[in-house]
Image 1 (spheres, helix red, strand yellow):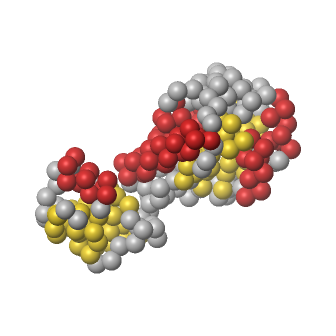
Image 2 (cartoon, one colour; image 1 turned 45 degrees about the vertical axis):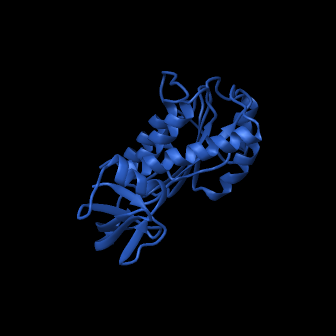
Image 3 (cartoon, one colour; image 1 turned 120 degrees about the vertical axis):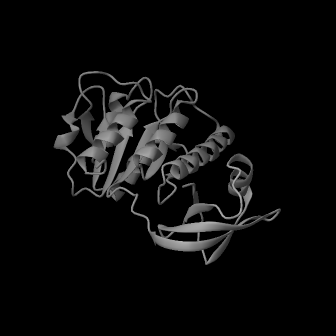
Amino acid sequence: MDWFFAQSVGQTHLITGEDAVHITKSLRMSVGEVITLCDSNKTEHLCKIERISSEGVEVRVVSEQECMNEPTVEVTLFAALTKGDKMETVIQKAVELGVHAVVPVLTDRCISRPDSKAAAKKQQRYQKIAAQAAMQSRRAIIPEVHEITELKQAADMLTDFDRSVLFYEGGGEPLRNIITPSDKKIAVFTGCEGGFEESEVELLTDHGAVTATLGKRILRAETAPLAVLAVIMFHTGNLE
């Protein structure tokens, strides 16, 4: 069943823009076929296509139910900027794994350092990737990809979380000793290709973050965030 998002859905709904083009041109769907629309209240609506025109794709709601596809834990990934298009892969797979939000972070060792114009374009691109991944994985929400943020600003955000974890190549506690099933809002930090400076580790731990390890092997910057999310989702019962 093809999955799309809408802010609100009445008994009938007109799908426009890129989604309408995707339905008609890419999927080549026709009148009588069905899709699912998920609204901002996390309600999924089974819809039948009633009409296709230059205005868009008009659908009629056949049935509706609460979407139960979201994890019980909200994980915000603070991922240091990586080289090339690696961050795009991280965002795509993180959304599939159930991340609640992504904050791209600029750290001292980041090689990628876009100016404000390039950073804005990157954020738009990242958000589009998140939306596509959310549709593919049938999420109830489209996770927000924040603007590229300095580490100090990211550290100041940690008061909003039940648990904050920094994955550091210098070592730390196993994740199973830090995360508990009762944690509802978790922040996780992962580094760029060069890892974190010791001063950055001190900054985050001073703001309440706990250093953690993913074992004896050193994972690539684009691998670590996905391993972290998979472990958290498993440990909190969200991969069952």
